[in-house]
Image 1: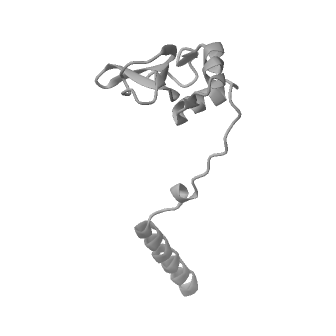
Image 2 (image 1 turned 180 degrees about the vertical axis):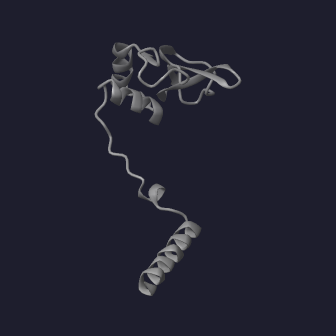
Image 3 (image 1 turned 60 degrees about the vertical axis):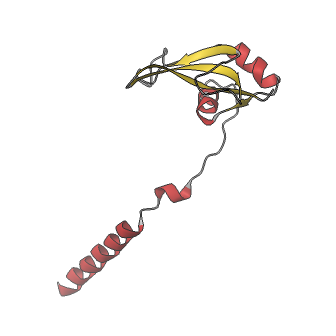
Length: 118
């Protein structure tokens, strides 16, 4: 079985609440899971202790059994010092779009012209 440690969504519309679960990767997101490992409530403030609650021992057990973690759960585990921090880099995300770059060059040209006129 290909196990994953992932989030299963609960809660009503516009009020998300997630369970951190160990599930077969072939099962649906909110479907059957093997074990509930914790909860995640994104509506609570980021510094709240109740925002992410995990049974770290059981998470380590499933990691030892070869379970893969999803990106969001890996961030929770990194914050809890269960997994080492991964280097994440997306250099294209910070680069402005083509139109914004064109506007910036036009603005710089106008500023240079104004500086020469003085």
